[in-house]
Length: 269
Image (cartoon, rainbow, N blue to C red):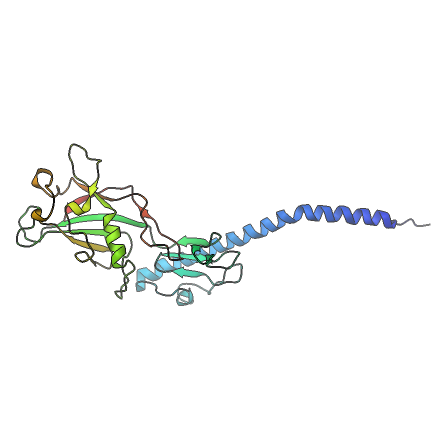
């Protein structure tokens, strides 16, 4: 006579299996979610590399999607693991996925907390400062023609077509966040850049492939008394961005923070 399982024994086994499955489910779900996030990060890295190559060959990428990269720079036009196309935030220099919630913003105001993002341009940084002796006097002055400071940054401040990525208010704000270090007795003590230049947006202009800001020096009569009656000493005095400043204001897209720790020596052109 063959002996089988009783109904109670089957119910006990099914109950045990259900308990084990329930205990394992969160781990499986976490694994699946981590796999999706890793896939999104891998796709974003690939898209970021394609954007870097595109901009090195063809200039600024203007689309909010990756469609113009497909074919020549990407084999395919990928969508993220949650079924939504990747987004290119050209103003911020970031490509991102909307993440599991598939939403671009949270409560219509702040950038969604679960978005996954990768930068394809470097953070904003001041990389060089040049003194331009416009009047050819050999000295830093404003005789006849005002000398200029040319501040070059690591990323574009306006597109090739002339559409400003930094509007006039932001430009004035950015310039107000730059300090000059020029006191020989206190070389680490910052001063406001406005003590030596006309740094309002009416006098500043963006040139040099949209990465350079040109600032005319302030005439001595217009400003305070300067150290040793000089504006600065080329090759010695420095400029730096103040801590905690952003290039792009919060408008629902990712921010790209400034690098503010390095001081850049003012050099003759």
